[in-house]
Length: 212
Image (cartoon, rainbow, N blue to C red; front, side, top):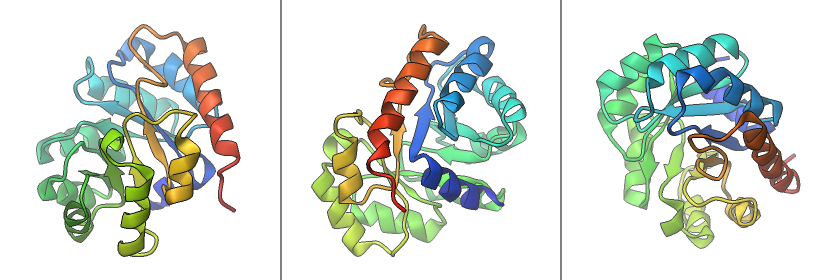
């Protein structure tokens, strides 16, 4: 199974991507284990975290069944670094065709950040695996539904930013395939127990929205 297929399979099982901004390498395994124990399958470590490539390397080696990668990827050279560390997922806050092409060249799943239909179609034309709708605080569920109506069938749409257990179902009903969850799940200083409890809360919120 290639990373793109693994991304779709992981989202079908659990439509949640953990965004571990600020994660340190010394806590990567304990926090990662807490998230995976909560039923999640996808983890991204933003590159503006302390020693992110080391954390990605540790997570990728310890949890080969999960899809591990990086967020806040802004340049093609960073894609190569993440790949060398064992990451197979590239997530960006913006649309940059060069980043998408490099991820595709290396056989990695890529979720660029987009906000408009123009950006969405351009990202797909560049080879994006799916689309990160960011920031979701500025993209209501109605906008997700409108995008779903015009984008190619099967396009992965993942709102990121401000997603909580309380508003998740509304976005799912509008056509969202999954979500990136950041500070509502993890923040620097959070304990593995706290993270596990929040991971379980999100999974409980997803339970009634899972598609057959």
